[in-house]
Length: 389
Image (cartoon, rainbow, N blue to C red; front, side, top):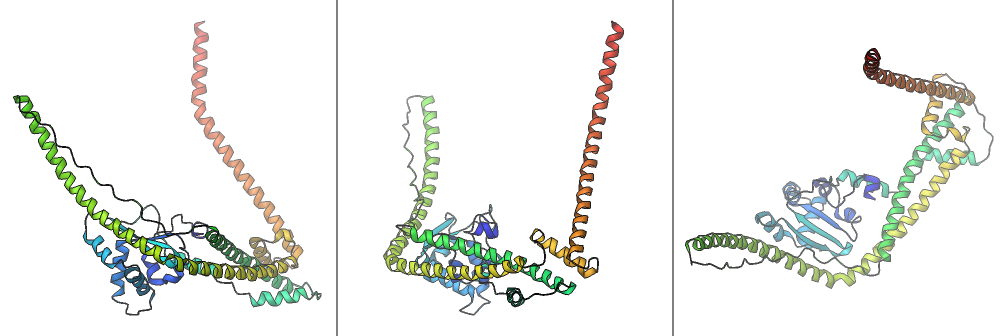
């Protein structure tokens, strides 16, 4: 869905604008059984923005309440900020949607994060498009089978209705595609036999302690080698101490993740049933919206089918051109419009063909000019060879 409508492959990273302008409920609707990744910088910016926002029900404060209290990550985020050896923490489990949250010090640079504008596009696609009253009225008129005159004004009105129908058909088709994809994702979720929160990954590996070297003092050379080995061993021990410290810090965070995972599993049975119920409701809602949208498509298609204009010309550019002909007085009826359109299209094709020919000639001339010196050299070589003979 994110790739289809937003042209973005990675949808896990969210921009600050999302937390300011979009509520957790609306955003988490798209993150069932997956994860959200938040950079430490974004979290700190959220904290800074919240100081000037004293509305408890604001989107930003709802997010901070979810992150700090419901996920219980506040103290860990302070540790992440202050500890130079820690780069990321997580997962934190939001069980109602089986969403995992991860926090890191670094933004992912490969992909652009999602913004509130991106979610605005998805929210609008989710809404049922309202029916155009003028099109509905025109649909009833054409459906009544009453004979109508085909004067200039009637043709102009028909063209306007067809243009509106085509534009709205495109929007409704996107709305239908959105709900079809949403239905597929929810049904795939329901079809999975065993859905569980994902366990923590990437358990830190304990560094190996360096082996103490065998030292020898039997000779001056052996003594010198032993000193070098001892220095290397001391450096290795120093590095081991540093790596062990980092390991212990990361392992403590891993233990916390395991504790959170255990807690999520304890809540899972009850929350899972609620999630399934929510998914079923979402499926029913999308089915109803698809039915309504397809009814609109039938109305718009009927208007196009009953149009005075031949179906070969049922595209926005063509109908807009016909309307321009009639508005400017270049045409008086549909036949004039079609004749003018075909004539202009014919001349455009001739012009395009002429431009292609001119481009080809120019290319051949350039090739010929580059080959000419070579031909002259070949001729001179042949002439000199002939003179020798």
